[in-house]
Image 1 (cartoon, one colour):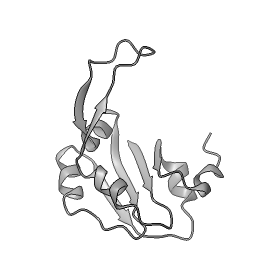
Image 2 (image 1 turned 180 degrees about the vertical axis):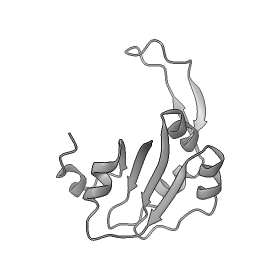
Image 3 (image 1 turned 120 degrees about the horizontal axis):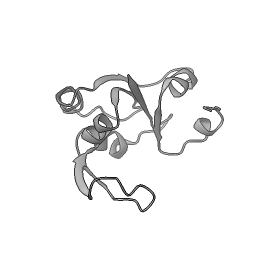
Image 4 (image 1 turned 90 degrees about the horizontal axis):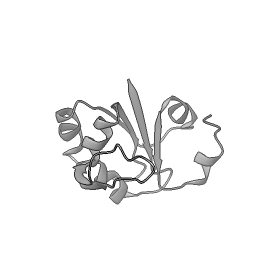
Length: 113
C-alpha cells in the first residue's frame, strides 16, 4: 500500500490543500520516459491513485479541509487521514513513499533515504 503525505507545516496553505480535493493536473509525456501515455488531464487524486497511492495523510495546519476531499478520495480508492498539527511529522515523512510540501525547512532535515 502506497502512502502520500502532504504537509503545510505551521502555516496555512489553503490552495495546496484545496488542490488535493479534485483540481485537474496535467501529466506531460517526458522524453526520459517515452512509454508514458500521451498528455492528459486527471485530478490530483486520480493521479495519486494511478501511482499506487492508497492512503493520503494530510497535515493541514491552519487551512480548512475541503468538504469534497474525503468523498473524492473515496471514489478513487484512497483513504484520507487529516490532522492540524503534531509535535513532529518525522514519522509521517519516513512512512510515506511520496511527500508533498510547500517547501518548508523542516522537511529537508529528515533523511528519507
